[in-house]
Amino acid sequence: MTEQKQAIDPATIDLASKEQMKQWRDQCLENWSFQSHSVPSWLKRRAPEFFRLCHGQTLHGLMQRWLPRLVELESQLVGSTPRLALDQTAATAESDVINPDFLQEHLWGIKPWRKGPWQYNDIHVKSEWNSSIKYKRLQDYGPSFKNKTVLDIGCGNGYYGFRMLGDGAKYVLGVDPAPLFWTQFMSFKHFAKDAAIDMLPIAGEPLETMQLQFDVVLSMGVLYHRRSPLDHIRLLKNCLRKGGEVLLETLVIDDHDQAFLMPDKYYAGMANVWGLPSVGLLK
Image 1 (spheres, helix red, strand yellow):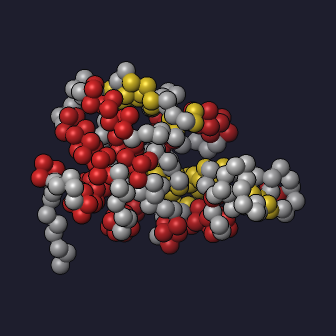
Image 2 (image 1 turned 120 degrees about the vertical axis):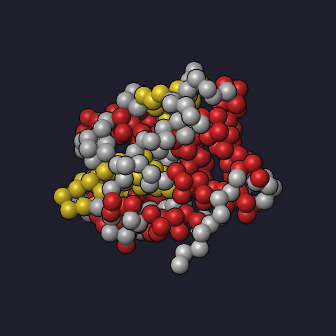
């Protein structure tokens, strides 16, 4: 018999207690994930496995500052129906009930914003990377997302996932272990509670043995960060349904031979680039 967890009232949380904050984060994950009617049944059945992976993550120090703001954001939006626009350059959410000073302070407190841009009411969040440029290339040359289930490995803060919903995706799941990115994702998700998108703060590797069946699997800007690129490609394949599509975007050597570049220490000033395959080797 499964032990029932007692729900945590955010008003009673000791903000100095890491354990209580971790419990609240885990409760948020379970309350907000896999709730959409668009979640495939085969995926919803695996929810307990995903939650076990998430609960095993340690609590990032800054989460003790970020989580209470997410709680406050949720409380201000209770009973309201925010307006969304996901089919334009800036993923946009609007609400007439949110306190503008609180919203600006919250968004400022969870920077840097790597991917975007975003728009919250009249607050424009300009990201470090203009991700709309890459997304336009996906629209022009990538697979159609219409009525598809999509897995985005290394999704960052979920910008691409929300844009995919704007292009008609049936359901999107993003995974990325960075706590900041999950906090940014949840900040927008609070305006889009019923949107068919979830994000879990975990790495992609544990998904390989779960027998997932997504229509489209994305890996953008991830492969060259992996010490074992072949294992990563195998992961993408194993998360795909038969006949599905993988979209792999990575740094490459413009060569059709079977070449592979392994930098001694840095590549283009980046210390976490482990290898660059040639186009021929990838094929």
